[in-house]
Image (cartoon, rainbow, N blue to C red; front, side, top):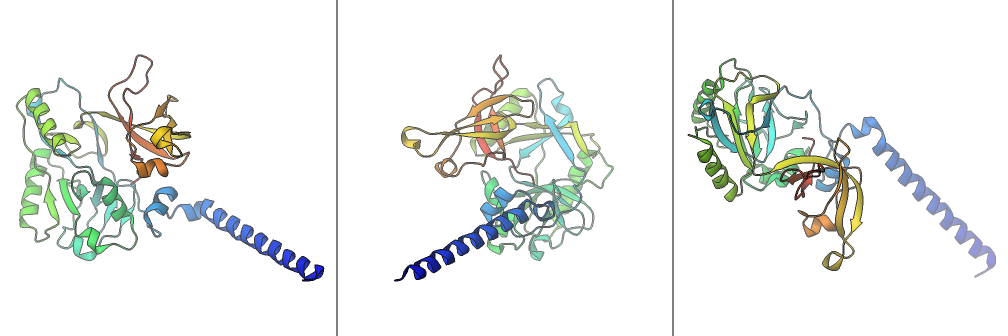
Length: 314
């Protein structure tokens, strides 16, 4: 082959590489633009589960729980299991997550739902948060996955009645419904702190997340309220991933731990709670993660911190 032919082939190759680089930068730029990013909840999480473009609505005005502290009058509260699913608000015609994501559920899933608001949890069973989160994020619903989802109801946002009466109304609504996917969060009373702890241990032993305590006389109001309490066997926090630290031994070539930072600036290493798959493809730097811990040290660091999941903005 002549020198001219070699030069021509090299020139063509350089041109192809330049075109490839330009295309890649264009795609990256489009993903960074606000008008593109707004169609997604979390680019990293969405790409991981194959989410199509999804719609947003105003965030519903939901009652949010405070953390349970001993010393309250338990006779004033009704107790139910805390379901580890996706909070879902029914506005009378569509399901919306706490963060304002419009859920594209199959039409048959919402059959026979009332025209008034409902508050509940989309749930696939204990220990299935990642699966249900991925299911509700999809623009094109997966019928097979949705057949495993239940809408567990625990409140009536549109009612001015106290919670005890709202709970009774919900029980009647579910009993009269022909929708088999509609379930009720069973409410009951506990006699004392020992009975509450015993119930918590039973739920956790079966793979549950914890308990919810709802004051009998509470009126539904948006925002955090000490009349709705959550009780878990551990505390939860959120932090930003700052750095991936390499593993050793059996984790050589994988994630060993992450340097993370809490909103108040507290930094610490998070090194337990990861599956092998998560160590091979860890949460990206800059992402928000949830972790559990058991109190704080005298220096304010989370004690026995363990990774739970990438923080979900649903």
